Image (cartoon, rainbow, N blue to C red; front, top):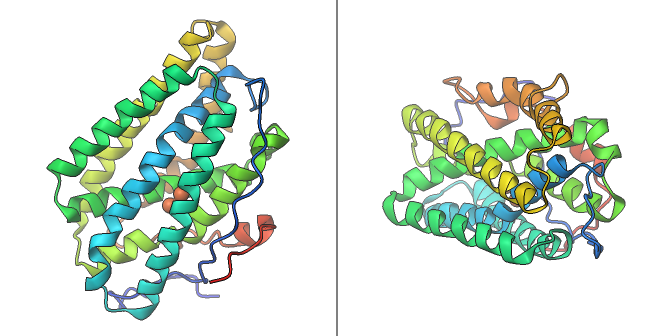
Length: 282
Ligand SMILES: [Fe+2]
Ligand SMILES: [Fe+2]
């Protein structure tokens, strides 16, 4: 297997495998709205907050890539874009359903969702298509490293309630599979280094603040925000030795290399390891 992506082929798809949209997993109802991740309020609401952003984020990704479809010449990249759009549309539907079934306090999370939607609309109004594509490229890197973390961290997977587990694993596999599509499209449009990294700094900071704010609001509504257990969990889940940010930070920084490509991190073995989902026939 090639250990490095060929950077001379600048305007082509560098996705190493075929992208295969899979059927939505069976999302079971968590009717009692328990803390589905290790019975831990912080971890559960952090993931719920991420999930609140997904249906809006997935639509944003699709809308950012779509305007460039006709300008892409490479046939494989065109095919990757079509499959990327199918996968993100499925993720959108799955997380809409997941949120409805798993997050209590509907009034509050609908308000948080609507606030996030408004900010996304303003962003789309104010930015050029290439800036929006660069933002998507950045956010796709973040989702891919998060997916990598999720699939390689046994303590995360083993503690997940069965009713909620499959949708995250299914989503993680497909995020890894299509992680280079937005990036390759951006490269094919001659998107530059400075735009790519400066927008990464901006969106990663704003997205992190948004998700933490939503998490805090959900915890506050449950009377869990100012508990010692919550603060300890915040620290260990994000910054502890096995924490999400500590474990993923090296991957995050790789994006700032001048000759970075998402497949520099060769983690397609995770797709093979966890894929037990039925494919959608094309
Ligand atoms: Fe997705
Ligand atoms: Fe994605």
